[in-house]
Image (cartoon, rainbow, N blue to C red):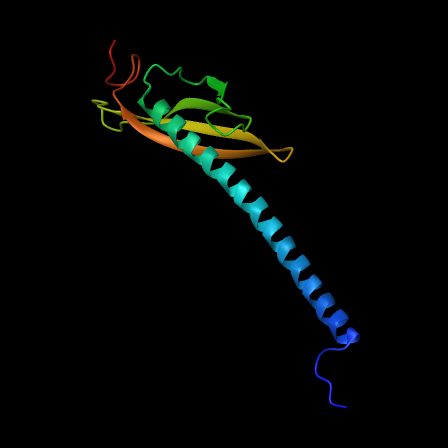
Length: 140
């Protein structure tokens, strides 16, 4: 008798191989989804940090040599708890006797909580400004 088809043992082996492959794929998809969420959060933080740095660079009323900090609005960051801390200092003064300019340094540290861990991002920006009162070339 010439029978065509699969034996029960062949079906069990094929099903087992398929099950192992599906479990492996599901594990990979779960890891990819987790990484995508982490990267999305990091992108939101970087965009908020850039925006904050641009605002600080444009704000000439920022107190010098004093740390300033505030939280970010979680609604703008997709519910991420985050905040920032910045400090303005003088990086360089004009080497010429007339003292026509000075260079400010703004250091910005952005923090956020991700999966129960506190993460930080540090940025540094510079801006040119006229000399301050008491500096060479500044108003007296």
